[in-house]
Image (tube, rainbow, N blue to C red; front, side, top):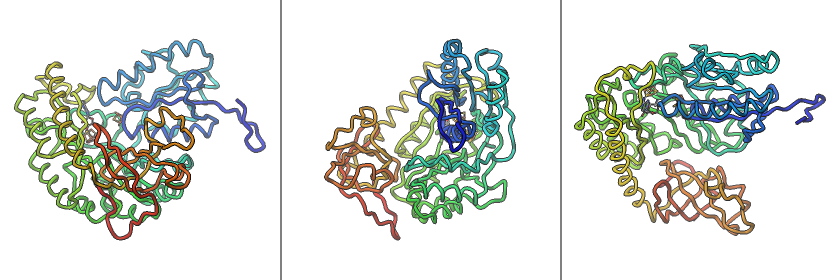
Length: 480
Ligand code: SAH
Ligand code: SF4
Ligand code: F3S
């Protein structure tokens, strides 16, 4: 496809990007999209017609890695049929496996690691011209800055992730992240604030500050504390909500706990992964806190912000986890009263020390334990959600509901299902009739009041009671 571009005719090619894994990869995909646009690539959702295909992969568990390889495997046939197609793998599996991928998959043209995104244009152009295979899995100790990152943010989205730090120094014994994302490094606060100001100007209303352990933001570099950074973001005009993820319980400071009380725009939600409720297991995981210390922090969070929602991650079947250890985990889940939980079967990872730990838990036992955690949490979540029926919640509207997007017929004059989140991070879907206000397209990015009518397994259902205007002044401004 040829496209007019000023005086020159620029050949436009297309790139298909499959993003797997965590929010780090979501942000990386945005950077990939942006940087490839400088050499004429446009993002496409059509795998069959793409000129360049990128798998942006995750290595956190064996299953995630298999998913990456099975996606790549499906491209072998496509590559045969389509001359000139460039097949590429990036992200954490690329960083971890490097050369082995080129050996194992002859149809892969490019392997690039998590620190190599800024060099993508040269690599892709080299492949285009020389028809060669390229690998770049070099790591850097300095933070990757994408100064022009904001250019991409022009498509209007209400909520965005902003990377504040990269890498991790914690070396939990099960985890691959320190090996695939390198050492912890923080971005200068001035650059973060500048990026968020630009986002706010382009219509973004909520930012999630992203890092593997945001609580240790800036410590190495002698920058401001994370709580101070939150206070600075709080001052940015146009931003209505601030979230962050992930915070390591060992580094959750009193200053940060206090921020849930004093920083007006900070949402009433914290993701605080415990991993296990057994002190013996926590020790072998190298988590550096006990269940008692963790629960004390949970209490303090609730004192600072009584309505706070807390979510967590749990790994079941860590090597050597006994039945008693597991019962401690179930007990902790009840004591913490989580609003939601992400539960994982332990998975051996290359490089991670726990892969060599003895007394592996049998997969059938792992499965049974996973099931017990899931059903316990389901009953807690259901109970907590049902308590919200009848209350009014403040929602930041993010867009049409998933159901509406899937059957996007948008019947003229009929009600449209919208979707947003409470401050406590619960998804709320609601209907808004045409007569209730100006054009529907005005809703995303707005704070509205919704009365909760029904609690479903993973979301709430409500009725719009108040759209704009919405006052934020001087008070914490949400419910639910
Ligand atoms: N930095 C974040 C975690 C990132 S990984 C933190 O410390 O909280 C997301 C989650 O994946 C982890 O919290 C953990 O629960 C899970 N996880 C990591 N490695 C795993 C492994 N080898 N097996 C199973 N789950 C794992
Ligand atoms: Fe992995 Fe632990 Fe770092 Fe989280 S804090 S990324 S679990 S090593
Ligand atoms: Fe994220 Fe997976 Fe990499 S969880 S940091 S994409 S290993």
